[in-house]
Image (cartoon, rainbow, N blue to C red; front, side, top):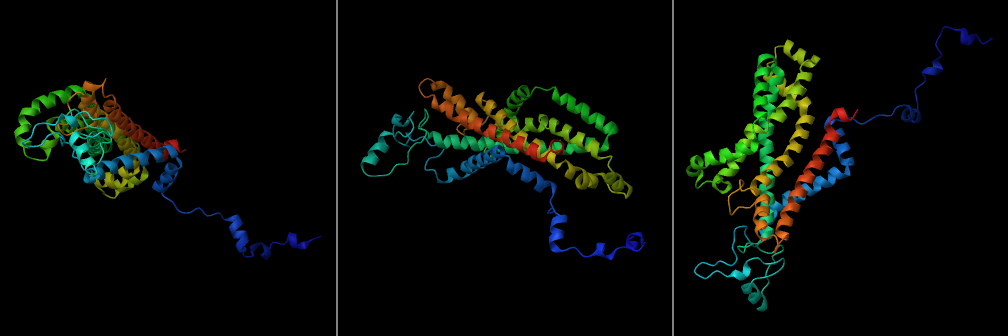
Length: 352
């Protein structure tokens, strides 16, 4: 009989230090990571979202950089020279066509930059107008989403954290705002504010945007934050009962500090996803309002106003309608696909 097995003394051989090979086999260490890093890794695996993001970056950089080097301005009428009759040969040029004076200069050996998309009915280079239109649409989308983010985040945080009567009052206000038709509000504000704001903004940077665009931003600030506030409120209502929030309250922390340090950081995925999906909605809203004549003032273009102007010559110059329509579709589709990719990557409910 093996008396060693019956012994109460431990077997020292079982406590021998493990070799490096045994450690590598038994211990599989995972590198430290964060919620953002994990979400970014999942996002990079989504090829559709990555391609959409690249398209958005290319369009955004093009709308910013190209006007700095392009030889034509968006409001430059090529056939109009001070003190001379209007040269109609520059009007309604097809893509890569030239006016009479440009052809004469080319015969003399000069190099003339081509009109890639031709010119419009007033002799303005159509390519640079499309580029400026994309800049206006993207600017409206980003700034409107920023307005919605700030207001919705503030209101939703207060309603969710305070609860009780404060929450009831804020939610009833949200319900009332939901019932207001945004198109009617924009038309009314444009009509009312036109007389009041025109002398105020005259001679300023805002005069280029016009009263219609200012009223559009005001409508975004008044109406479009309600969805964001409801989502943030729902998240904070579920988070405020967590132990770390109760611990912060027990130590005497103020509500503002708890919201900023504890609650909002845990809502970051909802904030990012909602903001990313709000941008294409704002761009589409601006586009169809400009199409109806409620957007930027002429001669500043937007993609919607370019499509609206192209209706007059649709039978003769259909590409003028097709080009801005394609750019609008590409921007909105890319932003929607990228927003869906962000939701799939950062929403913890979808990641199990």
